[in-house]
Amino acid sequence: MDAAPADRRSPPGWAEAILIGVASRLFAVVVLAIAWATGFASPIGQHWSSPLIIWDAQWYLWVATHGYHAGAVAHATFGSGYYDFAFFPLYPVLLVAASLGGRLPLEIVGPFVSNVLFLVALVPIRIVLERAMDRRMARFGLLLFAFSPAAYVYSLAYSEPLFLLVAGLFLLTSGPVKGFALGVLAGLTRLSSAALAVASLPDLFDRERRWRGIAGVAGLAVGFGGWWAYIANLTHDFWGYMRGSPSWYSNDGPTGSLTGLASIVHAQHPAVWLTIAFLVVYIAGTLVLFRRREWRLGLFSAVCLASAWLVTWNTMPRIFAVGFPAFAGLAAALPNDRARWLLLVAFAVAEAILGTLAVSGYVVP
Image (cartoon, rainbow, N blue to C red; front, side, top):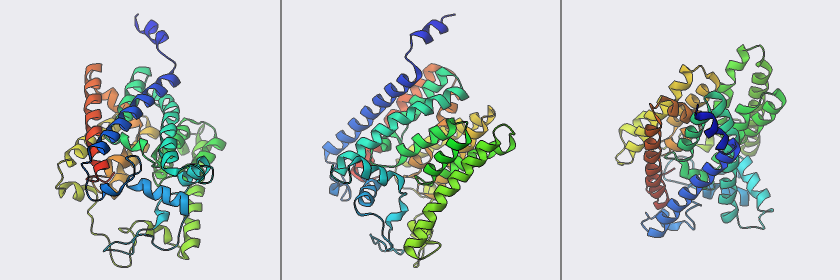
């Protein structure tokens, strides 16, 4: 009898999502700033100009400034080099627009855009989670997601916040026209858009939602296919897209970097245990989604997890953490609110550790 009055006194769902987003971004930025201020950095980390422009953020700003090139723009001792078209175009285009064509400093615009996008993304994400679970589980799921070990990335100039916004709207929409449009945008944002395509498959077996599924998959195919065609034309090679990853396509052989389980098993860094623990709880949350017959959300989370096996152990948390429905499933799997709060604290501690290591240049997000 006490639940209803408490719910009436709580803020609207959208406001609750924004509050969680603001709190999580303040936490992430403070962690990154403190790590930066300590000066405890590797030779790589010593060359960065800001704690919010690290690792791949430099690539996104490069593309926003210089566009794409047919040849490799960076070289290493292995493979054929690194190509800037490894980074999908929608986020750099947004940075160009937000910076007024480069008139405003991208070093400031990039992180600002990412943080704002994350706040906005939490609104449709919260609705998706509440529809799948209930208000309390959606709240805890959102908290666990926003403070997850890899959540510091959402304050960097990375494309994940943009993808989260598009993915949240994609999973929320019921219309085929919006589904197609959002599918196109997702296909131009990240390779993780493949998870949305797989998540649309259950719709194909449902007469009432079939057109939504068809339109969503078609939009994703058009978006990614258009990007593939652009790179093929740029490089004069139909398989040019594959050059974006040296371990997928190289004239001189793969990088030699271990990925997936082999990467975890052979890791010498103690932070690998954070990746392992995060994997375990994420899998548990995904299994809960399937047990509750939330097929679209379960498939989306599962494919996000599967895609992480293409990278090394230190990058894995960033890749699969965009599977936000798994966090609501994880909240539902825990026995009580005390356990949920304890896990939230553990997540925040892990985020602080990984964020510090990333800014210092010792872990690649």
